[in-house]
Length: 236
Image 1: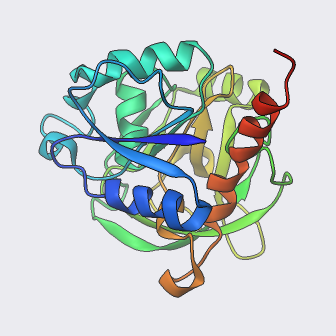
Image 2: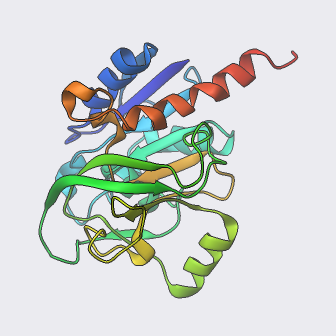
Image 3: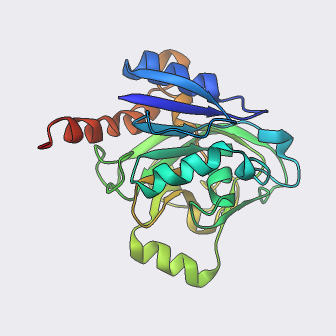
């Protein structure tokens, strides 16, 4: 499979994602500049973490207007797997490709730590090879990671199976202490209604090898490979 890793001015997780795909998965990955207008040659798209455009106005608010985002929207509509990590998640919500918004952390402090998340849905390409309830240990590094939706939309997200990851403790319980930023319902990641677009605040690309602190993130990235296998073996 061929992965695109979109780079904006201010991105800092793009090379992390690039190396996770190349070294962790052994697949081709290419950095794509924010001025690109055609992503049809790629099988998967990753929008990485960082501080696109310096997080001016608010995180992701300017990046949503970059030329590449029109191409991202087209590929999302076509059903291509798309993963937004941290700032990438923020950008996807600003572009309305994912529901909700990411607000300042409840502590009003930047949080850099390792957290536990629980897999809530496996109907997405990025969780298809994981079992519901799987616990993953992943790093976080953000100041605006507090996921928020209104109460009625939260009910709809839960009913539609759009909550993909939830912050939990080491025992798998969604406690207040396990919530690093005050996200509503301990939500760490969500998907669109179709399930092909996923965003999460934790960084799976920074947990692809035990030598960098853990390899649980590789299980998320590797799940999407099953989509490529299905396409490769589907009747033409």
